[in-house]
Amino acid sequence: MRYIVTGADGKLAGRVAELMLKNVSGDQLTFTCYKMDRLPKDKLKRWQDAGVRVVEADYNDKASMLKAFEGGDRLYLISGLDVGKRVQQHRDAIDAAIADGIKHITYTSFVGATDPAYQHIFVTPDHTATEHYLESTGIDYTALRNNLYMETFMTMRAMLAFMSNNRWVTTAGEGKATLVYKDDCAKAGAASLLGKGTRKVYNIVGSESISIRQIADMISKRSGQKLEYVPATREEYYDYLAALNIPHDMSGDFSKSPAPFSANDVVDNDKSIADGLLDVKSNDIEELTGDKPKTPEEVIGEFDYIWKDHITNWRQMK
Image (cartoon, rainbow, N blue to C red; front, side, top):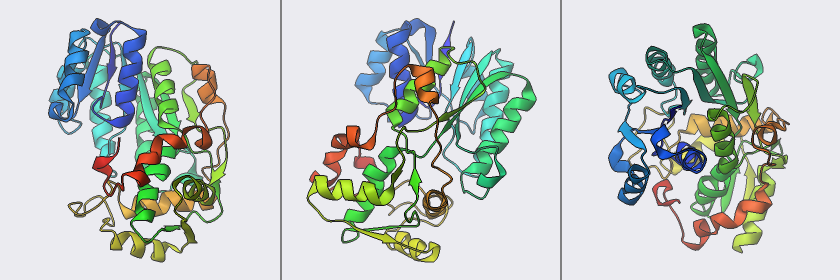
């Protein structure tokens, strides 16, 4: 059996890759990277010394995926970053997997992917189209519908607040969400890749409903720096993000942006919290992994460096 993890040079798939190494021998693994030079040399050496096949594969280059997926049986397909462009990227990856004889695909989707109530959220349509395409091909697949990541709010959103005179501006209002810890997403991804689970769709969400105001309060207490929580309109939030040099959409200029996401993404995601769409309850992580997902209180200590080291750019984050 050969297992393939795409995007292993990224934060989430990289965690899946490490978990797979703990469960199967390296000679059963292929890790693909968008750019090999993004990988620390010591990590690449460790993987290769363990017998892992590490190759470059670009979602914009179908030939590279056909080469990378050769000999594979089960594939972990991390969703791309280019919102609006990734529908075709995902289709090409799925087609390459099928052409290479892959028997099962685990795809990282988003909560509510096929529910019309979620279609206005900026990131949703790409996932909807990908899930529909997976279904149309007839290949066996599992869609892991991840909620928003807990880390995003404890790192990048906190960073933006500290950079804005301690003002945490958001369209999340007083809504709550079951934000999910990325390590728990990785554990669910590895479990699915290893063949655990019997359903096509799993909601990968946290075990605790929490508001963004509560997170801001937690960080205020932990950091000793009082953050002002500022509920905002969409227009006010766009202005706040523009002042931080965050582009309106993914086609904008990111050269001065402290974060890799667009304002459209941030505003819509936060507003969906206010609307109650991301307060999704599920025990699916525990069903797949045997462990309950972590709560914000359990993991907040991992992010102390954001305020202690005065982080001002996502590339400085661990």
